[in-house]
Image (cartoon, rainbow, N blue to C red; front, side, top):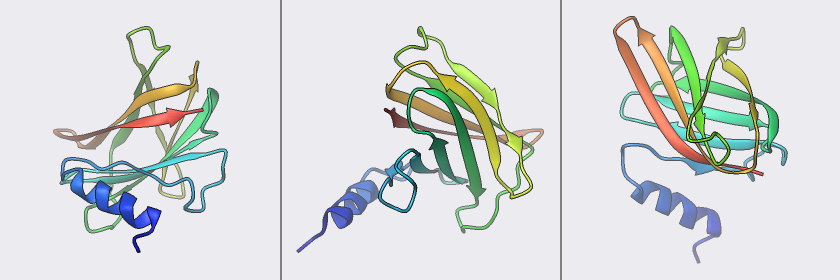
Length: 137
């Protein structure tokens, strides 16, 4: 018998190589947070939104290469668009922390399905963009 998690992993694998978002609330992240894993052919990011509900939130980003090694970056920005963004976006620069993460703080005015993008600047002339839907309670 195939477990529910195995079905989700199979579906995620069929979603395509451009990017995959995996919602893993049951993977040890507290129930106040939202976790997703994003990847492209050049970069991966583990992203945690705490708390995973409308209001002030902290977004923690852990960058990795596709070989699961730390990915050095010059700058990271978080871009959010959602139901109450008025057709616009919320863009927040992330700050590099001593624990090799990037952190941004924003206020999400409403719950619902949002689109979260990361602009990862690897050098002056090289940038990677990743986007995924997220669900805010």
